[in-house]
Image (cartoon, rainbow, N blue to C red; front, side, top):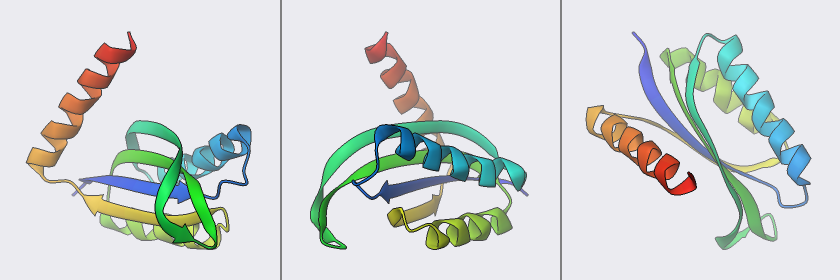
Length: 114
């Protein structure tokens, strides 16, 4: 049975924009290679952290929303842990209310960018 998940991860600020996009693409390939379907990818940009991580006060925030089997999440976690560019990550399973909220949020975002 496939579940919906949402992952937020923070990349180190020493990367260029191109390197950050390339790293996000690598994680999307990990997901799709394991049979997951990526529903949404969002780049929140360089933001100030609430507290320093690895002596850095900023980081590139990214969000991935995907649908996959449970074992795919562990493969993604391993990929995050092996990549030194990732400072922090968190993956959560979405329930039906969270899925509805995420979809309405996407619609609002598309409305403001248009």
